[in-house]
Length: 301
Ligand code: NAP
Image 1 (cartoon, rainbow, N blue to C red):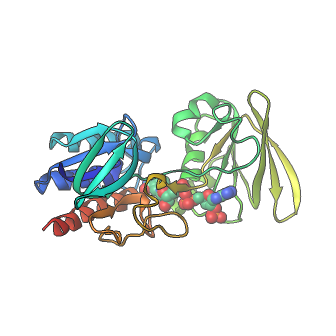
Image 2: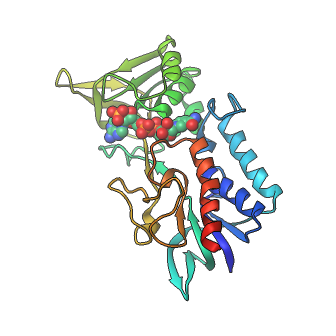
Image 3: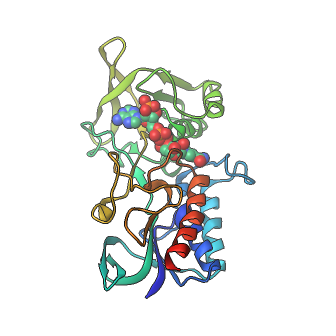
């Protein structure tokens, strides 16, 4: 029996673990992956986390984990299947075990959104990637396309332009969503070409990706682009599959919770990218971890 179980070990979960431990709560963190840090681990460079300009995402993730370790936080690697209640306590069911706690913070984060076009599933890992920092090295000297117009797409394109011969950035509108500072950097790179107003309708290739078929929304015509690799960065979807019957979600599937991270279910809290919020950043996830624990403490009293 724990005071608190935290599901997820990204910035929100680890921040919550640090605050919970310091508050003297008996705490268990359940993490799905063998490595803590969540999406941060796949970020080449984080330039907007206060006090750590330009830090590598992997290093930042490791530092978050070391902080929790230093306080003696208990971690168990487990895939959570669902949450139930029993005699007023919350039960967390994993593939192998069942854990009990008085309060739960769901900080399971979010995952890459798929394009859902022909060829995507078949060629995943054969020229299609969702992580430039993980797979970029395989495309040294080659031509690639990055799909998307957000921070991640632009960061990925900047990263890939360092080693690839040519990088196309395919965006469905004529304006990027990414931060201006990233856009300025992107537009200054000589081997980056913007492909505006285009959506991907198919990814082509036999054993490996050879190109993409685009639909030009402005010209209303089909276009083809020969590329060796496709990096898909079209946003994220919340990891709520195991929690859909636990607490209400909004129309996009995010767990409904305010700044205090309380869901409408007593004792169940949501923190980080998985909850409804305006800005999904490392700093807001870390902030959620602290707020969630403050709410847990109030609840437990
Ligand atoms: P995002 O900001 O939601 O951007 C997704 C992009 O993909 C948008 O440009 C969107 O187009 C496009 N898109 C969505 N669905 C598409 C589809 N089916 N086909 C083609 N294009 C599609 O997602 P993100 O870039 O992954 O970033 C996720 C969150 O993490 C954001 O809040 C971001 O600011 C944050 N982030 C933070 C940091 C940091 O703290 N350092 C770093 C990276 C990311 P539209 O623009 O037309 O909607």
